[in-house]
Amino acid sequence: MLVLERKKRGQATVFVILAIIIVASVLGYFVLRERVVKKEVSANLKQVEEYFLNCIEDETKIGIEILGSRGGYIYLPEFVPGSEYMPTSNQLNFLGSPIPFWYYVSGNNIVGEQAPSKKDMEKQLEKYLDENLDCDFSDFRARGYEIDLGSIKSKVVIFDGKISVDVKADLDVSFGGESYRFTEHKGEIGSKLGKFYDEAIKIYNYEKKESFLENYAVDVLRLYAPVDGVELSCSPKVWLKQEVDNTLKEALEANLQFIRFDGKEGNYFSQDLIVGNDVRVLYDRKWPTRIEVWDSNNGVMMAEPIGNQPGLGILGFCYAPYHFVYDIVFPVLIQVYDEKERFQFPIVVIIDKNKAREALPVTNILDSEPELCKYPINEITVYTYNTNLEPVEADISFECLGQRCDIGKTKLNEKEDATLKARFPQCLNGFIFAEAEGYAIKRYQFSTNQVGEANIILDKLYDLDLELRVNGKKTSDRAIISFVSQENIQTVAWPEQKQVRLSEGLYNITVFVYKNASITIPGINKEICNEVPRPGLLGIFGMTEEKCFDVNIPGQTLTNVVSGGGKGSDYFIESQLEKGKIIVSVSSLPLPKSLEELQDTYNLLEVKSVYIEFE
Image (cartoon, rainbow, N blue to C red; front, side):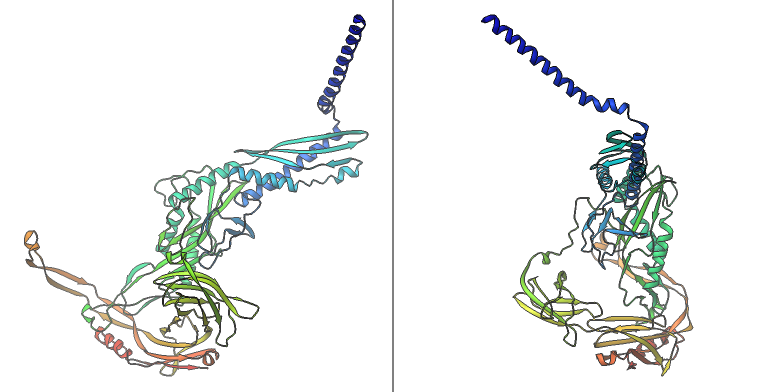
């Protein structure tokens, strides 16, 4: 019995070994089958795979082009709108295509950065291929091929001079009794996308560190626009802001394109940064640009003369000093390119109070909120209407002790009211400001130290044709006409400007009319002596001595002198403004022939009247 059991056990062991060998052989067959068959795949089936590889290459090139033209993006980040304060938003519209700014400031004054990493670009290209590899196999199918393409999963790696693409997808092909499944599709596309991106990052970091674009913009500002200076003149020096804006835009457009990155010394446009490819810096005057000039009014920039006021005749001459402060925001597009490819990205350039903006840490967010605004406590309901008590949607802000907070906007509700219910910071006798398109800004005194409501009536602005008459006749002589009310200030340079925007209210009106004339003021050469402290210890104890110095003031010839005008006040009502035309009438004055007579003329202007008609 023992012998028989041993025989049976030996037979069972043999069967187990045979079974293991058979299973291993089957598994080995299936594992090696693909490699074996792949070597034997026919040319008829291979041409389908070659076509698919060409399709992958073509679609990848399209994705590369999109990445390069959109600053490293195929799929755009969420849109962030701009505002009147920051008009650029977070995207630049370039030839109809949006490009995300790498550096921008949003409409509510928040600094943002959108420079993608190389890994981000790889993921964007992978997603693009996964979604767009829809190759057309219709020609093959028409010839009898059976083709089935499964789901696609792409892997992309960006190098300096090439892009590696690995697409995993089951491509089943059958033809003439043959069939094969292609599962992995690899290729390389020659491209400088990675190299151009690296150069773009160098330029971007250089701009953040050096603010070289802002520095060029400041130079352009001081060369092409009135900033600081003095004019020898007894009449105001006037610039039209629109003309200054146009000149600045043209100058920026013309000058920025000459910037180079070649490290050459002695060349104004050369940067101390060497970039191994061609670089172009572009600005277009049609792009959203904000140019704000402090102390300009109604589009007029004016330098008031000194020396013609009563009591200043001792000066012996007139001069008009000016100092204008500019805030400028505009986009710039930087392109790295060669004859075949390009990579471009935009950034926002900011001039703040005539100075280049300071570079900000990448991770910091600009906090421009005043301390007062951080503690809204009491709920206030604001209603805004026009003079007919019709609802008007308006932007609401609140000012207290020189600090101003944006609160929100009144909106039309189901009761047909324009209302805003919001929390305000506590303040006694603060001011609510309501601003709406087509209406004068309303300044409404209101205390927010307890819950309440404010009903604000806005005055409509009317665009009026303007006519100036001197001694009852229309004149083309140059004139400065000012309308000043509590809520609206308008200054008109006649005859260049022939319209004015007014709302109902009480206005102080001032008119200065000028004619071409010639007044020669002789030069002054005289010695002036003053008592000054003595040097050393004697000066400390109050001892003085006489010091004399020569004053040499060159002569000047005035070619523009006051010839008429006056001052007055009047209340304008809507029924008058609706007529659409305002006529301003003043009387003429004798042309002065000396500085003393010029001062007398200004004295006469104080008592001359201004007459207003509407038609």
